[in-house]
Image 1: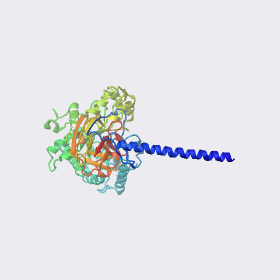
Image 2 (image 1 turned 90 degrees about the vertical axis):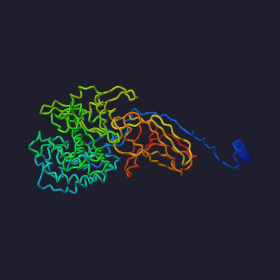
Image 3 (image 1 turned 30 degrees about the vertical axis):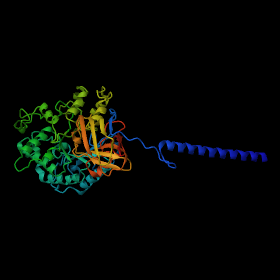
Image 4 (image 1 turned 135 degrees about the horizontal axis):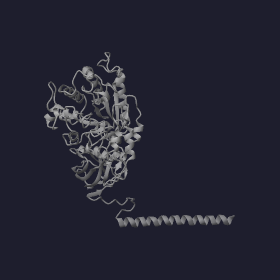
Length: 541
């Protein structure tokens, strides 16, 4: 036993000796390294990183396959925000735009058998206004936005003209709620007139319902008054979507030549006009969207917009294809596909027409009118056709895929960063320069005002520089070149930063949510937590 203890003691001494020797050796090696690096003894300072170059030039890989979510564009989902509060299903599908009717007739007790009642007063029921507010709160909570269409009727024609004073007051109360929630309301679809609120009723087809000839100058003046009143009672960032191009152009003409007792639309109001084509691809004239069924549009020839008083399909399409806002931006265009089943009044069904066309015709129609959004609910038979129809790969790198998948990706804007050159080494307060090439692979530009920021973020310090004068609505289909310069903040802390482009919502209460920020179609660029698009690194020295 004594021998074992002696051996253990010897081994312990040897182990301690080796540990001391190793420590001394490492210390000596560290001191020699410090001498070579010019570091004083006793310091543990690391070798500083090399400075970044003064200018960095990068190219970026595009994403041509993923149909990711982006605000205010793409397929929309039909919901009823007056009753529904959970929009998680829409969210899971990558949808950012909801569409909801406001069924005034349900709250007012109206029906086809009772299209109006002497009991209806100018004051809307309190529960209607409360349900609307609660629904809009739920939309905001979900990180989405909505298009609203209020109406006094569904499958029947409401006597709006005859009860205009009351209807006008109803619109005012609805618009008070919309104005308070304009951050999440994209557009007011000008319902009110006609069944489904589509302005498709007229005194020629339904003379017993109207005391006014809706195809006359008097009827045009009434439509103009309705449009003007909606625009006057909603804020400038809420668009007004109208079913028929002839009525959009009619409003433009009457703004230039106001009916007696009425004022012209402001330029901001004209820029808010939008188009919802609710008969997309159902027949050559999109069921009245691009045809008038022989109705005389009395102002068309006077204005020079048409050769005759009955504009042709091509003339009306040309109005929408060429429409630009005063800054040169795209009009918002959306819609849905009409029912496809044959009817008892001779209609053979819309699916036969679309099946007779080349598959790419659907996409070219969407592109020509710069489509922003389209219903993914109506009509299911056409949407199934889009899912089943395969189209070839495109020349920009899109894969062979279904019509539906390409629509999902390309509706509205799809901004892709191609290349950028920017200042990457500078002192605080120095000049920062950025030149970049952006490509919009989508069908349209951004249609509502949206700020653009240059962000410098190192996790501790973040600087958001508003790029005043940079207009994102002009980044339309095709290539856009950016040339930006500004002074860096004078108090900017030294260090390395991620430089990024940030396109948040214009409403400050939504600005911090990535759900409302624009994502570029690149790989490795999007920061989902911060909601911005990374360009590269910048060093402040």
